[in-house]
Structure formats: structure tokens, C-alpha cells
Length: 194
Image (cartoon, rainbow, N blue to C red; front, side, top):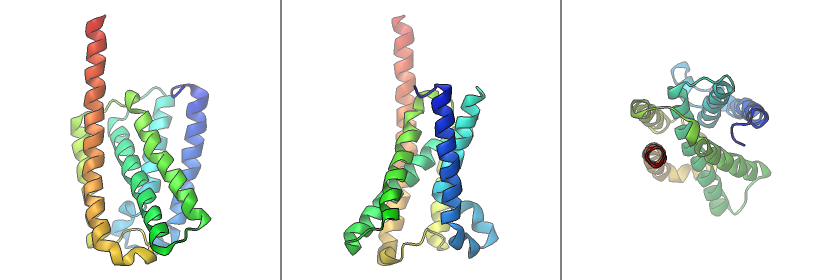
């Protein structure tokens, strides 16, 4: 089902409009962001943009390995990150807006959808190394230059959030690396059995 054309088109449309909504959500922060950091501030919409490009390539029967690697790692990282931040807001304040619950659901789906397409990615370890540099560079910009998403009620936890985000970047890359290696091992076993 994951590779059926109609399903891919529907998923492409959902991610396309989700990406636009994400950039709109970041609008106020982007308006105050120095130009040199603009590429690195809107984390989740950029992740879904990578995935939208991957889906488009899949529909065209093409493969862009670096985009695939960026998509799966950043979807997982920022999907998990947003879920954790919104749950932390709920635990800290005792309240969460409907938009917060929507973000938990949509970002949870982001994290899952990237992993679901593991059988279709064709990137290699060198692409994951580039993605590791990208994600750690992004963390550096967020927490050294103060460009991270604004959650005012969590500002007291910024050092702990920065530490969590750094390790989440590493876990995301190495999880994808492990799953891709596992996928190749299973493929080799199937070939040998034939």
C-alpha cells in the first residue's frame, strides 16, 4: 500500500500543506530571525519538505539519496522532539491548547511515516554522515545562538532541552543507520535463501 500511486499522492498532498502550515506557524519567529539562520530555524516544516520531495521523487520513480536521509532522520527527530515538548508543557502547566494536542498527533505521525518508508530509501552511510553534521549544526544554531522554537513556559528548562536535543540528534541518526543496515541484512538473507 505504501507505494500505491493514489496513497502516495494523498500523502504528498498532506505533507505539502502540512509543510506550508508549518512555515506559517514559524512566521513570527522567522520575521525576527537573522538572514544567516533562516534555513535552520523552521525545523519541522523543513523536515516535512524533505519528505514531500522524497514522495515526489518516488512518484517519478527517481531516488535522491541525500534528501531521503535528511527526510527520515529529521522527521523522526523533530517528530519526537515536538511530542516531548508538548507533553512537557502539559505536565508543567497542567494545560495544553487544542493546537498543542494537534501538534502531538501530527508530529507523532511525522516520526512514524519517515520510518515506514525505510524499504524504499537508497541512501548510504556517507549521506547519513552529512545528515549528522546537518542536525548537530542545527542544534548548535538553536541553542548557542538562541534560535530554537519558542516555548515560553519551558524557558527554565532550556539547558536540559538542549542536552536532550543533542542526544536525540545522535539517536535519530544511529537508529536510522541501524535500521538501514538491518534492512540490508534481511535482504541478503532473502537472496541467499532463493
